[in-house]
Amino acid sequence: MKKIFLILFALSAAFSVYAQQFYIRGEIKDESGNALQNVNILLHSTGYVYHSGTSGAFGILTNKQSDSITFSMDGYQRETIKANADNYISIKLKMLPANVSALKRDKLASATKDLTRETQREWFTGDETYASIVENRFINAARYPSTSVSLNIDRASYSNIRRFINTNSLVPPDAVRIEEMLNYFNSNYNQPKPGKLFGVQSLITSCPWNQANQLFFVNVSSQKINLDSLPPANLVFLIDVSGSMDMPNRLPLLQSAFRLLVNNLRDKDTVSIVVYGGAVGIMLNATSGGEKKKIIDAIDSLTPGGSTPGESGIRIAYRLASSHFLKNGNNRVILATDGDFNVGLHKEEDLEEMISRQRQSGIYLTCLGVGMGNYKDSKIQSLARKGNGNFAYIDSYAEAEKVLMKEFSQTLYAIADNVYMNVEFNADYVKEYRLIGFDNKVGALKDSLSSIEGGEVGSGQSMMAVFEIVPAVRSVNQKAIENNNAYADIKLQYRKPGKAQMENFRYSAPVAINDFNSLDSSYRFSVAVVMLGSLLRQSVVAKNINWNDIIAIAIQSAEKKNLLQQEFISLVQQAKIIYSKQKRKKSDNNN
Image 1 (tube, rainbow, N blue to C red):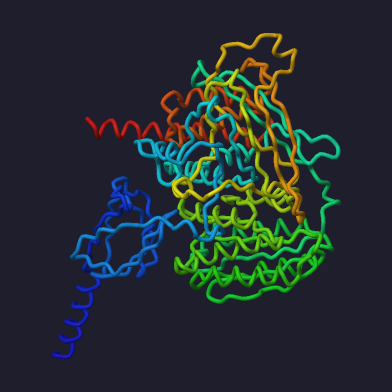
Image 2 (cartoon, rainbow, N blue to C red):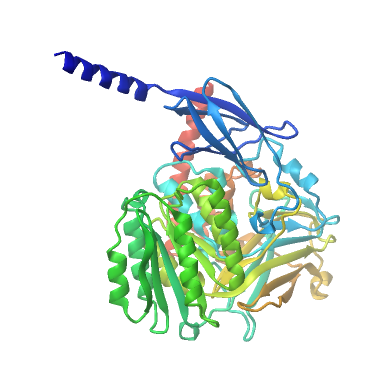
């Protein structure tokens, strides 16, 4: 009896210790005493990442009275402390010194010549700022006529947004990247002229959410390469098989995606497979694309389990890609993961630098994300950009088919690297302009040495940049049109794969203004996409946009046989229901 009592007492004590919970609280500021929101807060005992609120404050519920915590934010030095729940924590993060390796710096998605960081900093001191991305504001065209935009074929944001809406969830504003939403539909593709890598079209029309303003579209199309003409590929599939991938919409979905990809391969292509999870290693050495059964059998044999040593897996994958490097071929690592890297933050920093160095050797990085939250989405996007590659989010079998079969050459074959577009406005016609999308991270804006760097563009891609314009004149006379006056001068700069020399393509945008209702349907549909993104992003213009207007424009412009565009209509209708309920709930709480 006494023995049983002692056992019960021990179990009770153990349960009491386990059940006891502590609350670690604190605040985070910069060296000037300004509150820092959305700082990443890693709790070492669990590996969970939390974020500071708008006032810089945070609170973490844990079953340990003391724990190690690492604080990190773009543009600031990391800080690791031993925290105790009995003490209120005050953290001051220091900005990174000017001599920090450029490889570790965030790259700007867009930049305006001569516009100071002090001016841009005013953009994120108000109430409209969300998380770590700062929406572009109106810029005076006479003072700052020239602005640059990094072009790429990332389209993950749209399918990630679709996942949130299909699960009746609100979309985190920071998950909305309007340029990726536009990329997703590949609207208004026009094959460039023979011998040209790119073609450019432009158009000016009225702005549906502000009739006093105009919209300026710049549509860039890349050359479509015939599949038979594609160079041989040296592909390394790097597949996350850790325990977190043990869900139907994660590893099984990726296995289906890779089977589709294998069906597109030719005898001259090679595939290697590296896995990381409970073990890290080479699952399949370089194998001809003609041996489809052998490759698919290796994919089908994958099972999830263990931790997520992502860094080790990526290092092995790059070594394997280097050992089979094809001088005039397509050398690419394809990372497929839910983004749950279970490695220390210092190692993640090293990982980003290593990937940045590998891009110099001509090895590209394509990232396929599944089942991830917004923080992990941002992390994988960052890796893809540092690796001179692209990022797609796979939320269904249909999306896997779209990315890896229908858009095979766009996803996996680059026709140009370091692609960016410079737009120089004519102040005679443009008083102010606002670039829609291509928003920068707070850390990149604060870092005085961060710079714009172009992206990778694949075969047969249509990229749409949209500006909201405050016009300098209400109408354009016929003489200006006849004289071919330029509304804006556009210059594309790019580098062909494996080449060091930058090349450029020039285009002058005509001044003619088009009636919105007479536009090609692809442009009107793009406006509906922009309006949805602006609402979800909680943009400064969102108060002038309503759900019914988006639905009306989408229904009028969507092609009847285009399943993706028809799905967009259903998505907006579903989002209207979700956000209307949220609005009513807030109204009831205020009453």
